[in-house]
Amino acid sequence: MNPNHTPETFNAFGQSFLPGHLGIRITEVSEGRVCAELPVQPHLLAPNGYLHAGSVVTLADTAAGYACIAHLPEGAHSFTTIELKSNHLGTARQGTIAVVATAAHLGRTTQVWDATVTDKDSGKTIALFRCTQMILYPKA
Image 1 (spheres, rainbow, N blue to C red):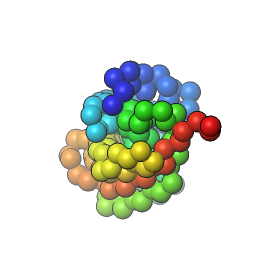
Image 2 (tube, rainbow, N blue to C red; image 1 turned 120 degrees about the horizontal axis):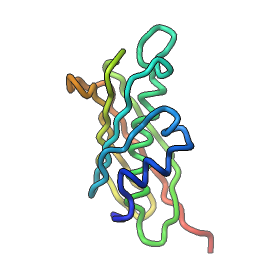
Image 3 (tube, rainbow, N blue to C red; image 1 turned 45 degrees about the horizontal axis):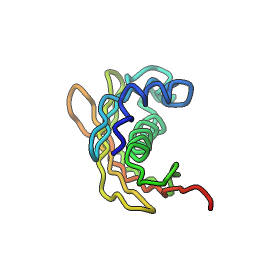
């Protein structure tokens, strides 16, 4: 893991992009793990008044993506998500949702991250994710 990647550096990194715009805040970066949270706000809801699935997916994908960046193998410069699978089990209408992304596979050409999104207050599982990233290297 690259020790230069901290919650503070990732929060600054994403501030001008979708994670910052939505209000995602990275809370932990450690070996094989990244945690984040997102306060539920009206702009994150679907027209039916429930949390939009895209908001939940964005939180999980952000945590898995930042985790991949923090764990890039030597010589790699970036990654791209090649698959993201989600199972939505519940929702939230208020409070904060949280995610824990954990490494399932840290290879030289791919990484696989599992992410669980929960309601921060109740601990109820909202969604389960598996993200696969392809590791990118500079062209020779």
